[in-house]
Image 1 (tube, one colour):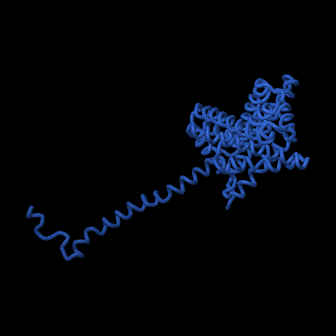
Image 2 (image 1 turned 180 degrees about the horizontal axis):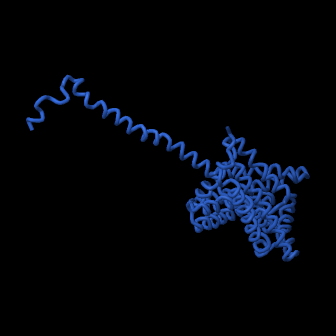
Image 3 (image 1 turned 45 degrees about the horizontal axis):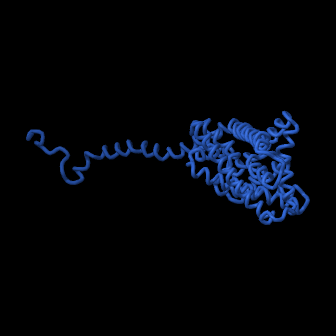
Length: 315
């Protein structure tokens, strides 16, 4: 069967979190770079589809392609790790320092990957800076400003709003990661992952890695957004909200709901492996006893008396 039971999924979540936390720095940077740039590709694809059809839902239907590529290739997406690595820490598989190191290096990789794609894409749609008539230029600029200065104008309510939207976003994004573990087939993984990602993108929630591309890209194209606007009014609160949404609503709640089942699966697996060993140990004494019972008869079967006459007196 392709379907993986929830208890087994929890075990896979913990193991995946442990593996991610143990990656080397170069691996984290490379995987983070690719994860960020591929998600940026998917973002501009979604914007293109929306612009061509005038239907936002079309862009949302297409956007998950980037997420699917990242997961199937085993790349790094820090927002997905927010639900996995904390469970490995909770189970004492890895120390807290390894979790923080992963988050830091992967975020740096995301920023570099998103910046590289933003530069290359900006040069493409502006025809090397000579033509700013492409319709997506204004879309990117307006989106960049809507994700920063619009919250700034709201003050404290803006910070609360952007954080809430980030929580809701990564609740779905991390659920997409987990749903990919519910099937053993590639087609099943793709279908399962697609659904939660469609949900978050269609509703305009805040995703930290998408924003690592769209906001600086808008700034490069002329958006009225400062570096402080980007980080204070979006990137930092969105990272915090994404972390809370991933670790609380997906990681911990699934952990609590499936923990007993996960342990049962592990215990059954250990019992199945230990079964043949116990059987071998239990049969060994009987085999020895059987061979020992027949030992006195062996000499007689070879035609030699078991206790030759006078043998005791000759010593």
